[in-house]
Structure formats: structure tokens, C-alpha cells
Length: 84
Image 1 (cartoon, rainbow, N blue to C red):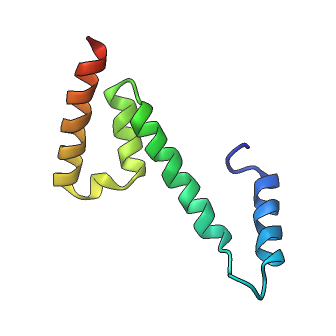
Image 2: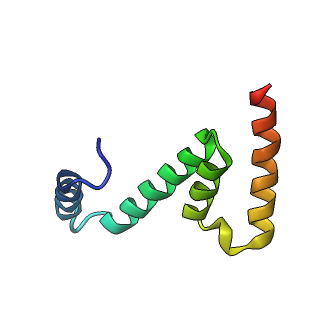
């Protein structure tokens, strides 16, 4: 399934309409969750520090300098291990 295609948007709206009156389904929340998961996947599979920085900025970790530094420290330590 491609991210952000018109078909996905139509499918989400149809699911939202189908469940009307039952448990609500928020298409916008699903879209945000997919984006968050994609950024997380990118962070976990990044091979370069630049890719990792882009991914964690997408996750919003750059807003907190301590979390940002900690994430970068962890990535550098783990990337060192798989590069050997």
C-alpha cells in the first residue's frame, strides 16, 4: 500500500463512513499514526547519521535537546556495532 495516495484517502473516508454510529474511526489520526510509524521505521533502519537525524526530527525528538542527544548517542553506539 502506497503512503498518501488518493486511494488510501478514499478508503479511509469509506471506513469512517461505514463505522458511523459505531466505534468512531478517525482518518486523520490513522494518517498521523502511519506517518509516525514510517518515521520510526526509517530511524531504525537508517544507515547514515544524516538519515537518522531526518527520521528523529520527523518523530519530533529534536524539540527536546536531551532526548535528541540521547537518541543520537544510542544510534551512534548501535551503528558502531553493526559496522564492525
